[in-house]
Length: 81
Image (cartoon, rainbow, N blue to C red):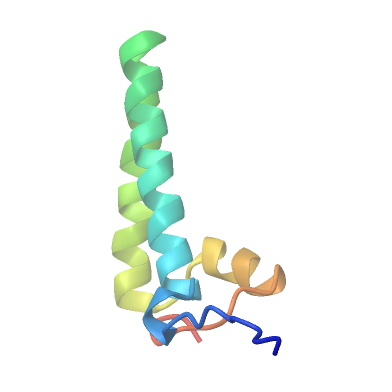
């Protein structure tokens, strides 16, 4: 008898648009902090830009990264529809 085992992932573990945007922002902040430490302090301006973009997205709902991820086929979440 052959039994096919299938791993079922809960819905919470699926990458949604909201999680993808937050993960991308976190990676960009960490990346710019490393570059500021190793290369030039001017990379902190990029960190400030990412933070400002997150702040305006929280109030307006407009996020360029969310638009890009949506076009790439990431499943929509609740924040950016």
